[in-house]
Amino acid sequence: MSRPKKSEEGLTEPFAFRLSASEAHALRSKIVQSNMKPAEFLRDCVLTNRTIVLARPQVTLEKTRMQFLFNKTSNNMNQIAHVLNSANVAGKLSDAHYQETLNCLANIAKYLKMALNHVD
Image 1: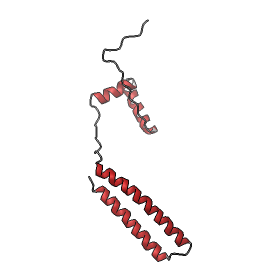
Image 2: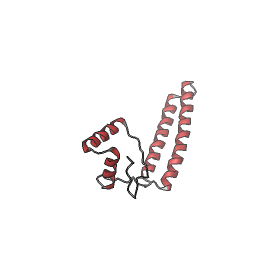
Image 3: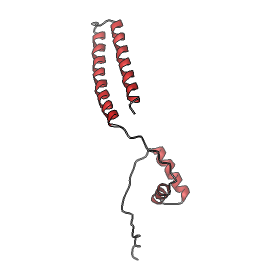
Image 4: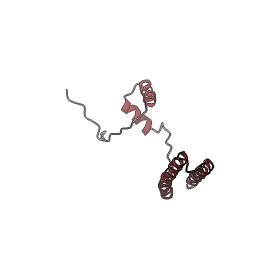
């Protein structure tokens, strides 16, 4: 017996994705309930618009640049905090000055996050 011919359109484009264990379990149970093969089920759900597509907002160039700069700044702030901690442990820096400087670094971090949230 020969293999049945595929339709003219053919199924030539594969798609693959990963799921967490709980997501995979939920999807498998829906597929079993549908009495369909997994590929048939997914095609039916997606192509007949039985799904809700929520587009993620596109990240602007300005926000991408700010994230890059803030990541660099965060690295420098961590280096400063490390030096402060070492100096404080060695007794070269008073506890009051240490706490004041750490509070300043925390405020800078807070302002950076606030600025990033107001870009788009």
